[in-house]
Length: 284
View 1: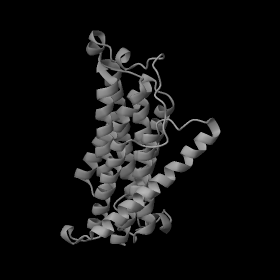
View 2: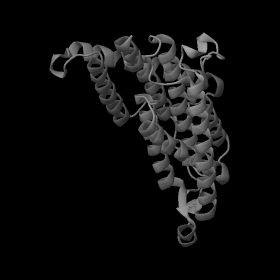
View 3: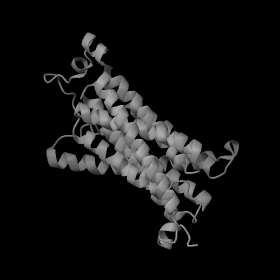
View 4: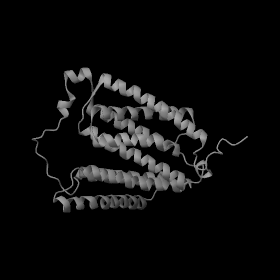
């Protein structure tokens, strides 16, 4: 009797892309689509979505989050020994659809589009939980992504969503509309003291976490190593952020707007590179 994976190239099978895994992924995709459709109908019937700035930010942050998970999937499957990856290539098609929806939200904040993207994100969270409970196709990266996506949905609900009754009694759209005549605060090429304090604290915490990930005991972590790793991350973040900020200045003779958010995005990317590198080194 032929093997159920015989129809697929060994290169795919060695990466966990077998017929059984593809079948499970297909069923999960169909179930997610059905849940998305049901959630979208409920959103259109009961809720009002304000196309404000947070709706755009939700699309931006969700795109970064999903892209990070895609990078994690590739790194695990290509750098770890075969069969030890906890993330799976078969999840990529569904993640690409979710990424495309949120990239569209990033570009256009139509209420129906935001509702569709949020419904798809909520359905993905539900199916992730069901999959973790019912199969072995799970990994820490999936769980972290689902939790972060749930946090983004919660913030979206607070900032841009209301029930129809609430919208009629106190419009969230009017309260969140940008005032065209408002004075724009001058942009600066540096961060304020609170932002620097937060960056330093976050970098130190991540350096400690990386040492723990390497297997070191908390009381045995050298302070010099923590300081070196945190300074390395801070300097790399500053370098990554300085290049587009300087380019923006030379092109427009003005400092880059929303520089603070860009610095934090750069810090997350740099931190992910350091942390995931330690993770792969530990399990390889």
